[in-house]
Image: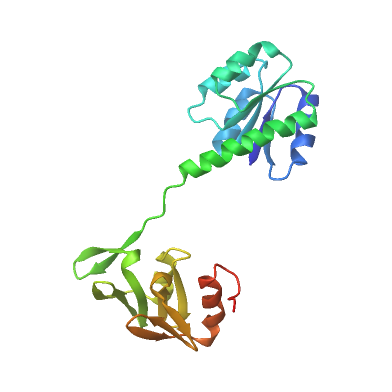
Length: 235
């Protein structure tokens, strides 16, 4: 997490910098003396966690936090316990009273990590289960689950689907980047196979119910590891 320290006291900034720089996974993205400096830092860099003092000149930490439209995670650092309820209302991660002890800071950072992971999980959109390919004068939707295998043919590829096949103007390398990880495997310089449709591997061939596909020697080890979830085959 990229962390920003905001405190008008030099000693407090120094102590927090020393503590935070020693915590694995935490990177100090800036150290500010005021809310105005912090505002500029938030505009120019990506900050995940804000260590924010409350009682500062010109703009207090609480007023500064209220002014932010999309604030990062916040841990209040203050010498006054009377703002605890206000911190709760502002949904801060934790409320640390000065002088701050390292064990107590680690507890607060653990809470921040949990919130940070929740934000990433919620923010990440689900991977699409389809792509669009050009066919004559239109784009046709193709579900990845319908692709049995992809065959390379110079500057074209042939998609072998559960419903038939279609020619697409693309290279194997470009189309391979579109396919979702863990669902397809390159088995030959001319073939990419859907793991879901592989029924058996025999010698240097992949069986797919009604047909066999060749397996290139340089691709065989990757194929065996993929169908065994990254481990060597047993038996």
